[in-house]
Image (cartoon, rainbow, N blue to C red):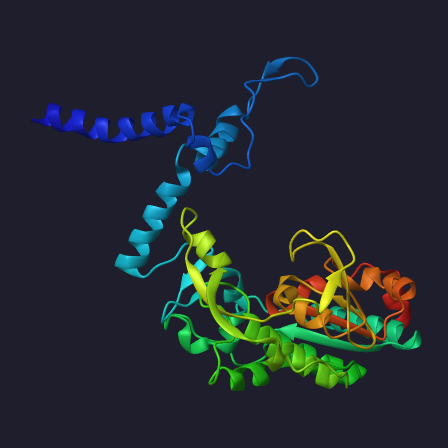
Length: 362
């Protein structure tokens, strides 16, 4: 009996290993696998031909990311964890009412990795430099922080996580910006008030949806005293067509669609750069509005691009960081407005490397 149990135990281990290894030879299996790591070489020719001493570790990493039907296996395992234990994975937190949250926002939420005073001041100094550089060239400047989803929907987070409500990085940065006279807008109260009437963040995505982007953009335009269109005239229509980035991280082999609102921007603007996706490093467009806008931004501005592009005569979106190291764009583009927008979880990315900042803020 013990021998039979041992054979069964070995078979349960070896058969799946053999299947997922040999399965990589099956047509279509490679397409289902998640690559990203090349097959390591057993030999190395640098400086002479020798055995690759790291082959074992490199092959383990390669196989873990490339075995046949990996996405299906990950998807089934994630589904079991979600249904049985209401658990996500190392990147995704499962919340209430089908809400998913990005695990990288957890340190902000709990206050476990607060910025140091030096980091807060470095961010504030970088924004002061951008503000002064812009205004000296005749452009109005505004800093905007896109709140993490769990800053707006804390009630949807699992109860085991306690929200930090004191000494938050954004509050400390706001105080530092007030001391320096840098214009900014705090969207947290605005979006928190709006969520009673609209779903303003995707349930299954890190970012705000089109409604959240519209509300944020209208608040920004109001702060800049800029006239923008009435987007109610752009035929807002409920749709269910958005595949959330968190769903992709949790269930790589399926598409789960999220609610959104579609606006008809046809004929309202045109791209003047080769456009591929909203994540392009540089996007430029012409619209029917008045004035030129230069926006330094991260992925939170993706949904905002059509609203901004249709509101100004010219817009330019720049995603390279740190923003303050790219202020020469103000000279070449000559905008009327400069906006620096970044997600709450990415505030540290505003710290620049430009030596002029220290000279300006001493």
